[in-house]
Image 1 (cartoon, rainbow, N blue to C red):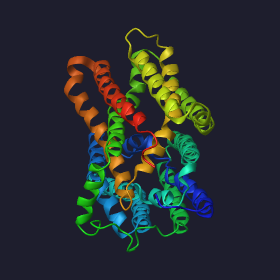
Image 2: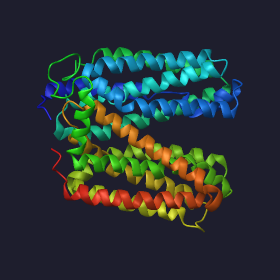
Image 3: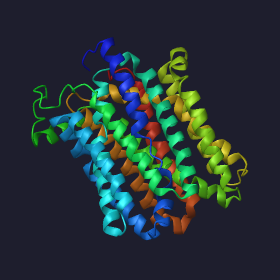
Length: 400
């Protein structure tokens, strides 16, 4: 990683944190299906539209990252914000299925262009020694943005104000664009000659694959993201259904989500202090083991219904203890010249994990039920993530 000064760090950090807050501020996200159904779209139509989005995002993630590394992180990131603004406008004007598909295609392109672009600039301008503290603050900023936008989105959903919600999100996208104008020009993009050999034209793909193949630690970190998404994406999606099947009202879901956000913000800000006293590697291992144990207790048959929300919130909060530490290792493993592409590959690994869970659910749910599918996914996650954790711990510190 290139040397950076404290002045560069002080300049980029507030810009990036404001970018994180604004780019994740979306009142429509949590209530999109509700809004679209009230606009007259059927569940099947909405599902097809969302499938188009996931397909576009999955296919374009790494290519958009390679383009960002080649032609400029800032330019491609700004294009992503423009496309996201277009997505909100297209949703506002959508009256039929083609209009809805256009909106989701714009969203897929926009998210792919944004993925990793401004983070690559940020990582090139911060001191590596401050990554744990900054990662903790970044995740706290994300939780704050998510919580406030979900709260405002809930109020607008209750009032049926779909147009107002989209207008608020469009305004947030415009503010994000203004913030990003002040980002510095990135180290490798904007046509700079600093790209490594093989990163130009189509050779960039081969160079990127060689960079991944040459870093076993980075490959295992991507595998950890995939295995985690394989279980926890489905676990979170079906959480409210699990509570409902145990006779708990929907208000318990809302209360547990609110408690999860509040406690996560408080805990994640303590990570730098805790890691300095216990050691980063030990804290990361403890967070993985305790989280897996709490999740397994949740999945055990016969668990009391009142304990399920407590276990769900606890495992999520415990995860926050190790998340900034693993993220620091991943950030320091990013190959020079392929930062955006590798960050996009991480997003693609998460998407692939979610797709695999959906496939498992479709194939096995009729035979073994939802609980059985969750148990199978959990065992796969625990085995893969556990083995990768052992490798990571044996090479902790080698990434720098």
